[in-house]
Image 1 (cartoon, rainbow, N blue to C red):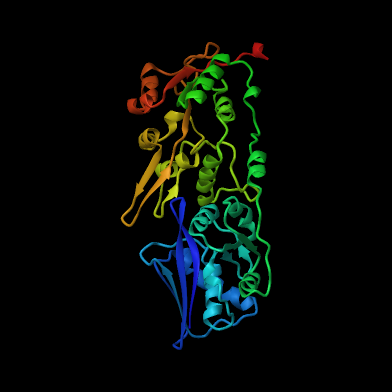
Image 2: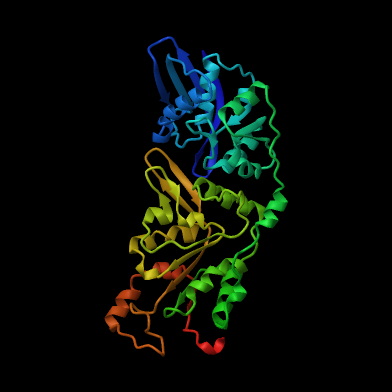
Length: 400
């Protein structure tokens, strides 16, 4: 017997529909998943088998084949557990569902049958809205995030039994509703404020100019002069995010799995400050199966690179294209992905290796050759892309 359902997968930051087909035939017992599944999808066999048994159903002792279409696109993640389990129960005759094809189903299964949250739910909900489906069956923990995409009915479930009862019509689930405007306005709050900075008036003026014009800025000064404090407050003086910008930013963080459980929508501009030991894939994005990097996670926000010369030179050189184009293109043998990366770069560095070259109260211990070598770690083409260079002197007690 054959059962067909619909689910979603994420490629880049956008989702696309996946057809789930479950077939059970009278042959020696086996469980095969085809359609270019990755490790997490292949491991769903064990999760699905245990979940079905622990929910009081019988796992068929026959040949089970799961096909995921389109077959030429790699499938990754654990969002297919729930539709696979429902498809198996339908194909084995333990559940009769006529309307399964009208819903998008996504969710990870625990061994006890409970449904856990998955990444990229906002992208899936936006795609489901465009497809015009009857609704989405999603994990309860993802309901708020999916509800941000207005125009599609979201039905949150806690376990496999509840999802199956809803599809069979023996139980009703109220669609989850989200007041997007209220949520958007409530989330527009920063934990810090630009007014916290005392003194450094010319630096604050430079940051205001950079924020108004969207310019990249580099601050040069000794340790303790307030470069990091100023940079962290830079997003608070940028224009408020529009709703479209917030949705695009939230999609990127959702795909990366960085959304907080109680934060379904990012309404403040992101601030990312990676450590100087970061790799080029971590900064730009990539990997065996590409993921967004720090430049994409800071989309519509600020990317702060502290101790700029300490970053590997090849990592810094990879910033050239994103700074020019506002996007990152990652090419692999089987795919090519484009991540948005329109960010404001804020960099900070010391004037020399010891940090006290321009400090009137400390003596610099660096030779001219050391200072030249230190500053030459930043290439000319990268410096050309940073519009404002400003010295940040040490602040004295008289400001307080």
